[in-house]
Image (tube, rainbow over all chains, first blue to last red; front, side, top):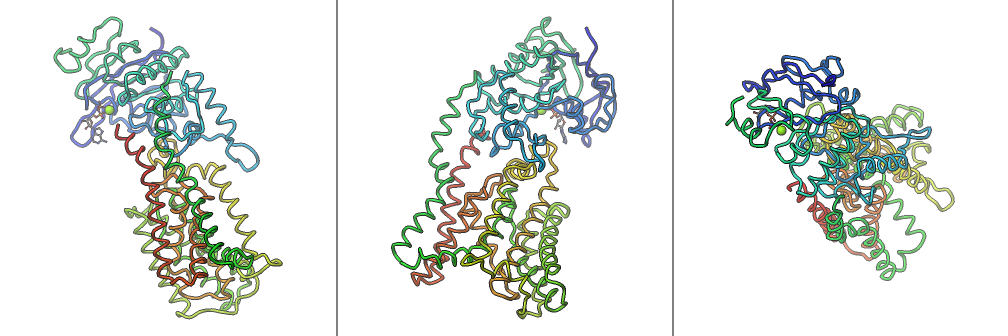
Length: 246
Length: 331
Ligand SMILES: Nc1ncnc2c1ncn2[C@@H]1O[C@H](COP(=O)(O)OP(=O)(O)O)[C@@H](O)[C@H]1O
Ligand SMILES: [Mg+2]
């Protein structure tokens, strides 16, 4: 396969006596959707938090486009093109959709640097169209949106900034069947546009529907790295639960 | 594509609360004015209206600062004491120390902002659990300091420059009226059209989201307490002009009217919700109620009961409106 965009190389993270992530290595290839799987507490969220700079690894290193990430924070990660959609959707309910999409990176205009609301609304609309997200009223507060729409906004917010890689932690966990398929559709659209994606999910159907490859973790360790087309749900579930020892 | 029905249903279900929230205070104010103009012929006369505006003006200034704080889901109990302290500082600087009036005014405003800054630091650096605590402490400290530096007696003989804002008229119009209009427009612009204003809503609406978006929450919090202190001081300057003196108990209990105005004006104690316009309405609901009951010779204790009931009604609307939120976050 091609050059990896991200290389996770022997990373370890301990919380007190707990080794949450134990010497985990895997590559992520440019343009692929990589599933990161494992039971609750397997260490998935901790892995991605080290990638996006919420935590620093106790050992090992992470390279993005060949460059080692050192003491990076989430903002620096975003600046080099790594965006993360966290498990708890961090939207500001009372604010409208453009304000949420542009939160912390507002567009300004004029000598006083006032908010460029018109431009932000236009850009939001373009972005939502690009992701094929259909929301009628951009000026509504995000509180009035459904769970799937909120998730869509949370994702859209991260890809506006020409993200090279988007990490999603359980983006479909709280959604109904139909809304879930909408989010999967967004993931496919992003992939078509060349964005690399790491998808954490518990849901076998989701993982088999959109991923190219998967990494399976168990109790902090990497247990398997598989090509989605070459495996089966039963096999994967077996590895996750430990029924199949890899 | 996305199912839009759920969003619509949400809206339809809660539109009543939304409506009350947005226009309830305004409708209430209009009704009060209508009823009062029938009950007493004095109410709708120009002198009385100007009088209401002058009486409302101090609270109008103080409440703007409190609005910012409440938008961040905080509270500032110290605004009344800070008002009294900064007023005393300005009066002493001018009358006792002979400082030029413009300098004394700057010192007055600075001392308010400084106490506000201390409130912000106590919250963000000492990590006191809630601004209720830090500003309750400041309420006592600032009042105590005021009594000490004034030796518990009023200071009169303020220069004209210091009393101009609160005490002078241009023709029939009190100077404070156009001043209020300008200050309210500035705050409206600040909250709605600047990045800082947007971030104030974000910090109150969802602090975690704000932090993730790279916003420095603590910086925003310190800023709103500084501005609350500054606005209290500005209220102190206006009050000094109106009564033509500084006095040690100036601003006593003003925090209550300011908080009440902000809440009646539709701001949410949960943070992230509230407008400058709403606060203005809230200020006038209280002022008109007081004025009307005075004109009708109804005793002050009934005025308190009236304001209390209005607060309950306003906060109840807020609680109803929060329900869809609580539910959707549980799903
Ligand atoms: N901040 C933390 N402090 C202490 N322990 C933690 C922390 N974060 C995660 N852990 C522990 O690390 C392990 C892995 O957690 P996590 O990465 O959240 O797993 P997953 O996302 O796969 O469910 C768990 O045992 C969890 O309790
Ligand atoms: Mg997790």
